[in-house]
Length: 376
Image (cartoon, rainbow, N blue to C red; front, side, top):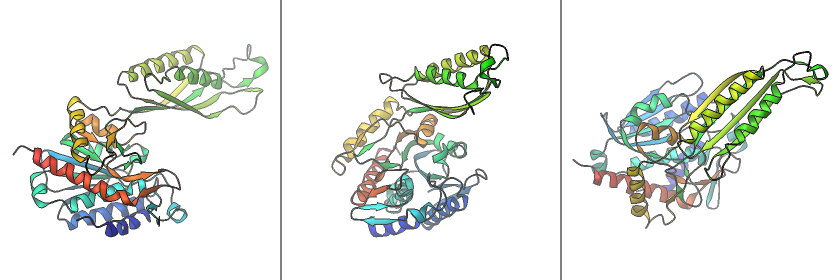
């Protein structure tokens, strides 16, 4: 039986640990906390070193297997810098619990353990389950994705424990993201002699790229474009020889990637014609788009849990999660299964205490159903 008091006590311990970017020791501490919990259940656990920039990835399995019926996913990092837990410590005010990274997503990672802890033995005997906690989701899982790929490829389903939003809408679809950082190298010179001194404005080229990328911005196609000028120019009478641009394009349709690639190729050709050289760094995240089987399963789950979670439904999300990556490896993904939370990435981040047990009950029903569906 779910013990809310015990859960909140454990959650306070996790929230009181700085585990954001650069807090490697804190990420290790959170990983060890969860490892000890699963060790106590008799599960096989492994801390995997995935790089010096982040803490370890923790994987926990009820048994080694050639295939896993279910992969459960949580992350132990937050967006907050070291020292933030002192500024925004764990506290309870009425029905809300506040704290640094409490909703995104220490509540969900801890919930994954509590779900397994209370799962009937006959269900765990029937299912092969892997629970993975990575330390770098907030920076795009750039180190852990390769490490958890093997488990993801072996898994039929994946439940991700990002917070449920206040409207109760879980996630089976997420936009993809095409992010790029572009450095422009022109030639500096006095602006009054541009026709004779060979000056080439890096900022002018940057501005051209912003406008051309913005042509992809489309409500009809559900594509958004956001560009930020990070650097460019020093004085109005000096032609800037250097500029830097950062752009994030979020898209819901698979074929949008082709449009983005064509635009980027054309822009590189334009820069060359203008005498501007460019250096580009790209982060390319696939959209999470369910298969027909995935859609059918999601609807089955919605009906299965309606009596205990009447607001349970699905919504396309513009933000990214590990679901964008895991979905490409094959599993059917249902995301946002953690307790209900709000105001993530802010000092007002919180979860709703009265909805915590609903999260526990929903996943418990879903996992029991997987066991019932499994062909022996």
